[in-house]
Amino acid sequence: MRTTTKLWLGIAVLILISPLGLVLPEYFKAGDAWGEWGMGTIKELAGYVPKGLERLSSLWSAPVPDYAFKGWGEKPLVNLSIAYIISAAIGIAVCIVIMFLLGKFLAKKE
Image 1 (cartoon, rainbow, N blue to C red):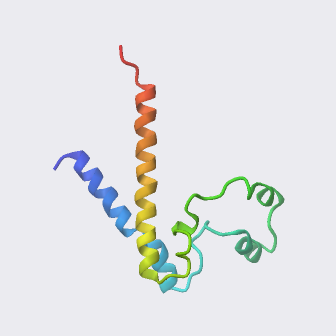
Image 2: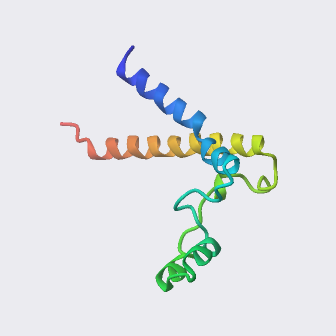
């Protein structure tokens, strides 16, 4: 098996297991994944929200918040798992396109 085939298979497996980030916290009643906290959760955990974080929080909003599509927040876990898989595929595709374009731009033909 070629190395690139192994790479694509590995990426496909990672895409397919991405809903584990949704399923496992639900199964173990663990709450949010570490580091994926909103301002309310940070305030609850730390007792306050750092001023810099509060000031910069409006600077960026995710293109697909919570890895789900608009209106999917209240759907069953199966639907949210599908949204996770689609989000992972979109994210990886965007990264591949950016790296490809960057490589084309930086590679100099002589």
